[in-house]
Length: 221
Length: 98
Image (cartoon, rainbow over all chains, first blue to last red; front, side):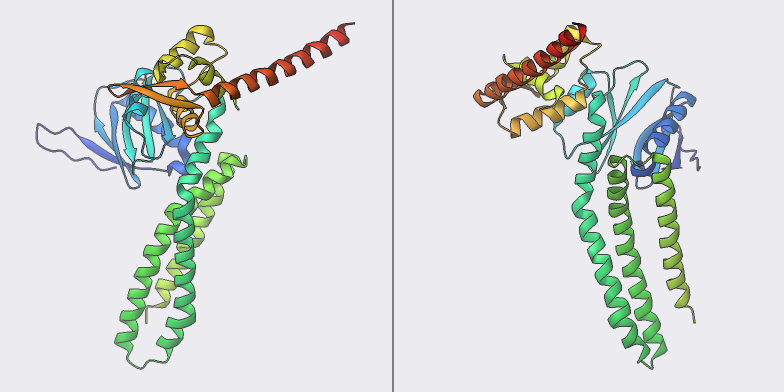
């Protein structure tokens, strides 16, 4: 947590690491409720961080919905039903808050279609980034590495390996932030319990981190 | 056709704003019928894309929706289907009580 004491006109803010809405939506929403009651208002979600601002404590509920670039009617309908729009991520993921006791933002039967929409949104980016990652890895280990092993110039080899590592890390990051959420939503729809879902992705993240770390470490002379 | 779609189609036999549909259904039976605003918005979009509803006017940012001819046909078909289901269940219960 980092506080920034700024000039008188600016409120105090802090950042909290999100657990990942796709993997731990309920946990993050509970934390937002707790922070709101302690006087920390959610301002926006910046990448993996939730940006909070000091404010009057309030007892509120939070909800997330997935809509692809909705128009103003959507936000007005939610507002009219007591759900105030807080922030959106990439115009696809929308966070709302309401006072306690407000009727749910979804119908009881609609939770499934919400995750279907979410999975659908991530499907194409997940597919393309995963294909990109696989092609990159095949090129790296099948073409670039054998070529590098035949080179004499160690400085050039190191530079090419660093560039290749950066490209792989960027593509892998894109893949993780699209394919993993897609898979998490599909597992939810398949009825896998949230706790199991979190365990699976914790392990996958760990494995990916270990592979990247091993590769980066192998570049050190 | 799910329950939300059924109720929304029936509520839009006359032109209404989207939010007026939600209020109307709550007044009818808030315990049994709850269509949240996010569900309402999604369902309205789906029904318009399917040609069962159309937007007939706009009052500022609030759109007014009404059922189409195809929507009426689907609603009538769904009513017939649900009546058959209810009749079947009532008959089964009557036979059991006898």
